Length: 112
Length: 112
Image (tube, rainbow over all chains, first blue to last red; front, side):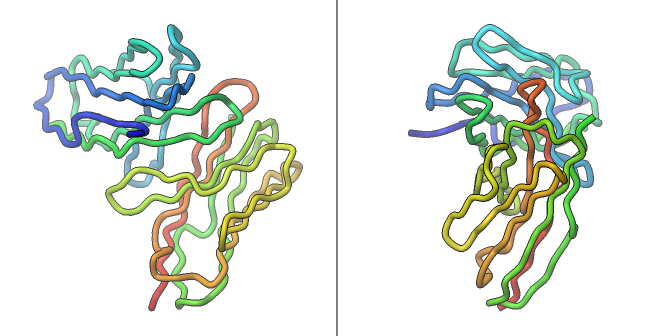
């Protein structure tokens, strides 16, 4: 049981480049989430998916897109990276609203 | 809008002391409250989950309480150890949608 996995672990981009952050869970969870964590700002929700086939915006969705590819996978795409998107990105999942949320190890992204 | 605050922002205690971390939230319409631990450079690890109908949860040396009507939760750590040094975050799930709102965290340092 790998839990929640994220790739890549580290990434450096130049302004304007695009990339996709991958997340997968093997716990048969329904809900999946993408957060960013910045010093002094805490964890902020970017997008979430309450079930396969649905996605909704969180607090800070601008500049990002997501895809819930299937029940296991939830990807986050930066179409045109900006320095303000330099952050640590965490993926999380849980079975339902009443359940524990499990986190991946994070992706550390730097945009130059 | 749901806001979650945590006091204190940082705490340093000698090994063996009992300590209390505080979490406050503005909207009492929640499904549950969760306490997490985050070690430097790592993801979040769930410690305790309290449903809105519960008053407290215990796991080993940890005890979390919830007073939904006053919008408060406390995390009690008994007989602190240097290995407890980490950032502790609380998070609430609102009843109106499948989102989790995090507090800014308390950075705990336990001195040997």
